Image 1 (cartoon, rainbow, N blue to C red):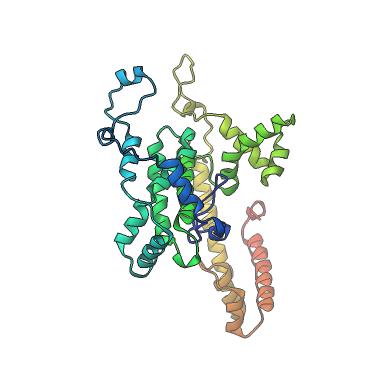
Image 2 (cartoon, rainbow, N blue to C red):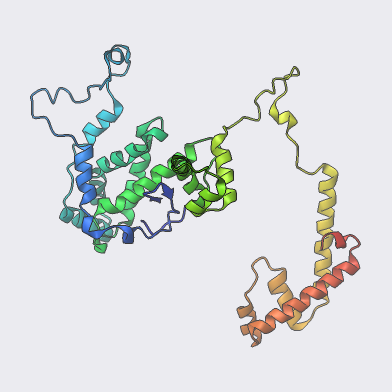
Length: 352
C-alpha cells in the first residue's frame, strides 16, 4: 500500500489513512503480472474485426426490447467510456518502468499521462467490484481515476513492483473513501475501526448465522478485532436512516423535530457567569505568578501558562539540571497554585 499520506485502501474493503500503510511489501513480487493479465482478460473484450464493429461504437446496450423502445439516451455512457479507454494500449513492464523513471526524475507530464491512460481499464475493473454500493458506476470510476493519478505521483519504479500492482491500492482506497463519505448525509465511518465495520459487519453476521451462531456484538468484535461498543454503534448507524430535524412530528400543531429537541447550550445568565468566573481564575493565576521567583517563576511561565510549553529537557538544559528535578519543581508549583487559588477564590472548591 502507499506510504506517504495520512486520511488508501485495503483489499478487504478497509480504508487506511493515506499517509500510512506498507502496501508495497504486501504485493507478491512473483505475481506482478497478474493484475495486468486480469485487466486485459476481464475488462477488455476481444476486438471484432468485422466491418460492422466500427459502426457499433457508442451504440447502447439494452437488456430487452422495451428498454430499447423507451430509452431517451442515445448510448450507454459507461460503454462509450470503455470504447475510449480501449484506445490506449496496455504497457509492458519495461515501458512502465521507463515512463515511471522519466516522471520521477524529470516530472515529465507526458510520461504520467501515458501511465494513467494505459491503466484506465484497471480502474473500471476495481469500480465494478463496488457497483452494488453506488447508483452510478461512473462516479466510482471518476474517484478511482483520481486515485490512479495519485499512484502515479507516488510510485517508485526502483522497488521492483509493476505499476498496476501498486496503483490498485490507491484506486481502491479512493473508491472506498468516496462510498463512505457519500453513503449517507451523515458520515458513518470516520475511524479505522468504523471503516472496517462498515464493510464487514454484515458479512460477519451472515457467516455466524450460517453456522447457526447468534451474531452477538461481543463475538463480532472479537472476530474483527474491534471494541464491542464500536460494533453496537455501527450496527445502530447502519440499521437506522437519516432523519431531518425539520421533519414534521405529525402533531396537530404542525411542529417539527427541532421544536422538541433539548437545547444543551447554557442560558445567557449561565454564560455570563462562566465568563466572569474564568476571568477571575485567570487574574488569580497571574497574581500567583507574581509571587514566584527564580527557577519557579521561569518554570511557571514556560510550562504552566505558556501557549507552547517548553519541554522538561529544554528547561533542564537552561538551568543545568535534570529533567526529573524540573518535574519536581513543577509539581511543587502546582501544589502552591492550588493552595493559593483555594485561598483567594470562594467557589474554587467545586472546580478543583
